[in-house]
Image 1 (tube, rainbow, N blue to C red):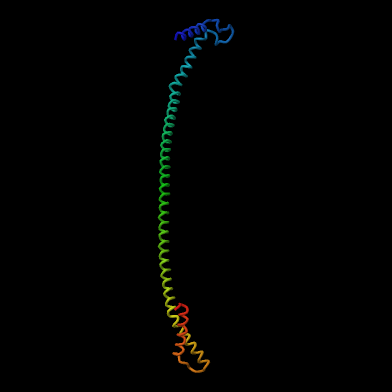
Image 2: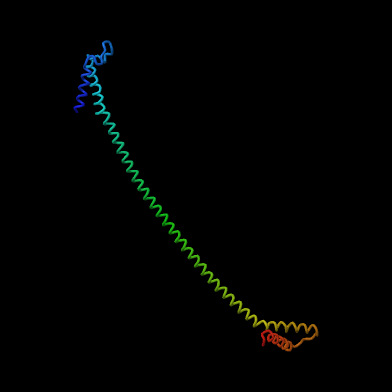
Length: 195
């Protein structure tokens, strides 16, 4: 404070001394007799500028800055809230996707098990049907084997009787031919089966 007062004292003493900055014919701003009016107008102009700036312009600028600051803070808060909501929605979306994948996998496994079960059931049914058909065919073959000698003998008797009739020209007794054919077939069966 003391240094400031000393500075002002030296400044005013320098300004109020006549020969410091003035010139005899020079600039009127440097003539000490005009200094009082210059100081008055300087104080009046800069004072009014100061009042106008401090009371009108600076409060508006300050209000605008505060409004912008609050708007920016509000925008940041809204953006943060929206970011949190979008993060939550993204997590929910990922959770839904994972659940859907698990459910699809379970459904696929269930469908696969059902298809395998159906295939096994159909395979078993088909094997049963094939076994039944094989048994039927075996039975038919056995029946055919049992009946075939009689049919063969009957055909052989009829054919032999027809041949003999054509050769001799007379009817032959079927019982004689039948006895001969049965005797031959009996020998062949014994030879075939080892009896």
